[in-house]
Structure formats: structure tokens, C-alpha cells
Length: 111
Length: 116
Image 1 (cartoon, each protein chain N blue to C red):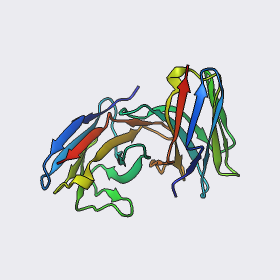
Image 2: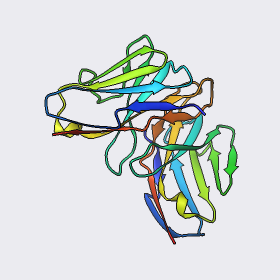
Image 3: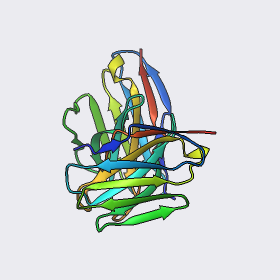
Image 4: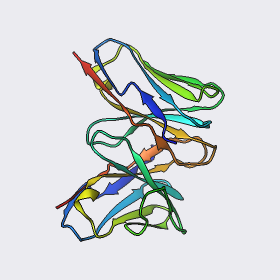
């Protein structure tokens, strides 16, 4: 039931782009994206609902393809502050509340 | 935005003792809270769903007698790790969803438990 994220780790230079994917074996109602810095709580980035949503915030955007049961997170012109581990959290049905998280993608941005 | 507060931030206990971790929603009522466990460099593994006024729902493989959850009010859930052993050492983190549908999850600061 745990979604699968890829890649497991990415190393970039500042200013480069990255794509993180999240795939589920089950149909999804929503996908959440969070970023976690070492030793800290995860921080919310965005929610995507079924219906083929795309969302963007500054230079971070995401898409959700419900037919393919997958979501992608796009990081454009990465900044040092983008470093951390990114998790997708999936919700199977509306109102289910609980989120099941992928294994995480560790993103390292070097100057 | 909504805030979830978790206490303590870290705790060291001896094997065989019990440890209680508190999770509070500070500015909203949370009928449901979630407890996760995270090992170093690994994912957030859902342990259980804490329901106000009723029994918690545990995920498969999680021992309910070892990880006692109490959700006595709309703003407080507690996780008690009973008879702790070194293998219980981990980062425990709670979360609550905002009121309504399609809301984000707010996370507590997490509790690093070390059992010696």
C-alpha cells in the first residue's frame, strides 16, 4: 500500500531542475507532498486531488495523473533551501484522513 | 496556520520503563490524530489512527498493547510506549489534519526516543 518514490536520492547543483515521482498500486483520491529537513517535522508543500490537477508555488509545482495513479513533483532552478527529503503522502478515498507516505527522496543541492 | 505541538522533543529512558508522548492541536479541534514512527533515513511509517472518544485503529504489525494510544479530548492524544526496549528507539511524530476535507496534515515537532 505504500507508494513508491523515485529516485531515492538526487544530487544537484544550485539552479538545476529535478523531478520526483510517486506511484501507487491503488487508485488515489489525493496526493500530498512534504519536505523534511534532518531532525525536523515534515513541512507541507501542496495537495493534489483526483481530476488531473496541477499546482504550482513559486518554483515548485506538481501534477497528479489519477489514471496512472502517480504524481510528480517538479523543482525548477533549485535553491540551497530546497535540500531535504521529499515525501509523497497518499489518501485513498475522500475523508479517509490518514496518509500513507512513500519512502522518501533525498535531495541535495550543492552550491 | 494550525499548529500541532508535541512533547517532549526528546527522551532517554531505561529498558523496561514506559514513556508517554503528548500531541496537542493548539488552535483547532482534531477528532483524529495520527502517530508515525521514523527510523533514520527512512519513511514515516503510520502506526495508528487516534480517534477522540474511541479506540485507536492500529496498522498491521503494530502491537497495540505496547503502543498505547489515548485520545481523551479534541485537542490531546497521547502515545505511551510500554516496557520500552532499545529496538523501540526511534523518532515518533504525530499529525492532525485540518478541519474539513482536502486539508493538509500538520505535524508535531517529533519526539526522539532513546532506550538504553
